Image 1 (cartoon, rainbow, N blue to C red):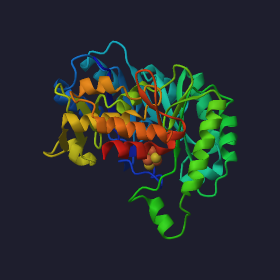
Image 2: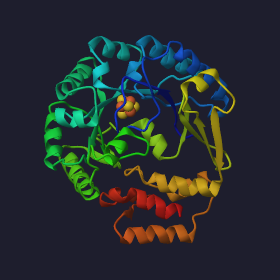
Image 3: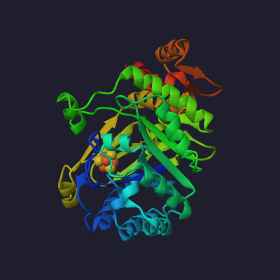
Length: 377
Ligand code: SF4
């Protein structure tokens, strides 16, 4: 039986980061949220595998805005209701929301892995990104988390801003090296539709990121993170030995996960090989009131699910795509057309064939979207 996980969306933020297109509401977290999450789990749990989930991920929005008592109710409530003995609980947090007391409370309620929205140690970069913390606070929070006993830490960075230099990578990683952090997620800045950043660019108040520079900085990041002892195991994720994210690997492997809360996505693999997806409405009040139509459900045929599992399976650069296993899971034969597409991408150096799996190469990581498009078209 494959691992499956639970995702809980905590939809509040203190302020809007101009580049962000996630679903969130500005303001303080609403009391009683834990109760609503547990009710949603009770309504849906019969649809997910009978075995206990292996991971719980609290994402957002800003989960660290939720009071530790509410977090405790969610974590302990889900653990009991899902019959969990052992699982990995991860939580996303922003530096400005944490202090020693909160970190200790998070540890006490069972959070094991913290994903910190550091983004940069440079005040100028943080200001450009519209973040609420500064570089000094970013360093302090890592130190505080480690003192509170968090050995599973992940740090997020955003690179590829207009006017940035390649040197920024070394500067950030040199600062990070003072702490023994096991996991790094490094993203390139993207300009999403409907974001304040896009409007600022359209009004010439900010410059757009440059594609060629982003390709250069990505290659530089790959090189420097490797030199710092991190192994790339996903397009935007690097880890030291044993520190890869268990929960995110379920997404990349197109496994089953149950999303709870407004805007949360779910996916489950059905016995006949189809993938069923559910998307909760991105509207806190509608979700809270449980109005009809708060959830969109779609079913994908086994053939389409197989191709999607192959296309997105390449994101996991260590495990890669095991065609035989996916073909059995989705009850779909491997076509000669798919094999010839893979061989053509192998000639371009984007993918390579290992013993039992096809994997994305280091240079192919920059073309991951093109690889997925090629497989799906
Ligand atoms: S804190 Fe995170 S979720 Fe909230 S606006 Fe900023 S990037 Fe988006």
